[in-house]
Structure formats: C-alpha cells, structure tokens
Image 1 (cartoon, rainbow, N blue to C red):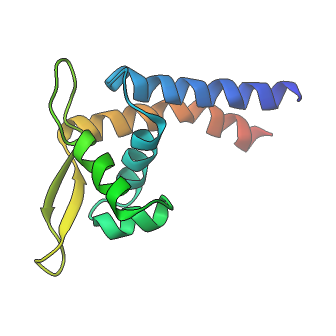
Image 2 (cartoon, one colour):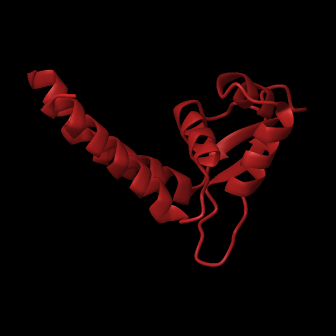
Length: 117
C-alpha cells in the first residue's frame, strides 16, 4: 500500500468518524442507508433495499433507527409522501442535511488531491 492509498483510507476514517459523531452507536449498515438516502432523497424502502442489497425488513429497520430521536441523537431521516401517494418518500431532516454536508466537506481534501494526481 502506497502513501496515497493510506491517505485515502485515513480520509475514509474521517468520514466514518463524522457519521459516528452524529450517533456513536450508529452501525455501519445505518450509515450506509443514510448515505444512500442522502444521494437519492425521495427513494422509498424498496429502493433503499435494492441499492443497499438488503432485505425490505432490514431497510425498514435502518430507516426506523435513523428516524428516532434519542438522547443526544439527531433525527436524520423522515418519511414524506411518495410520488404515487401510497409509498413513503425517505428524506433527510435538517439534521440529516447538515450531517451530509459535513461528510461532503470532509471528502473535499481527498477529491482535490485526486484531481491534482
């Protein structure tokens, strides 16, 4: 592994630390679900299940966990009305958007380094 590879892994660790800072007990599966919703707001549980390659039940549990308010934890995801009016559209809350923006900001040094390389 070369220096650039190690730098990229360190950057990934910083991103994961940002996500953990939101909720120190957040499992990796919830973090991945959050990032999928951030990339494609408005998706439904079925969409999330497909992109995260998990069962509908697991996708639903991830969304429930991301939508709960707990002690010192922010609610990151909320459900609105879907395109067809029957399904739920998964959307980021203000706290979720803030966290997504922090993640993007922590990636900028890595992205800039790749552009120069």
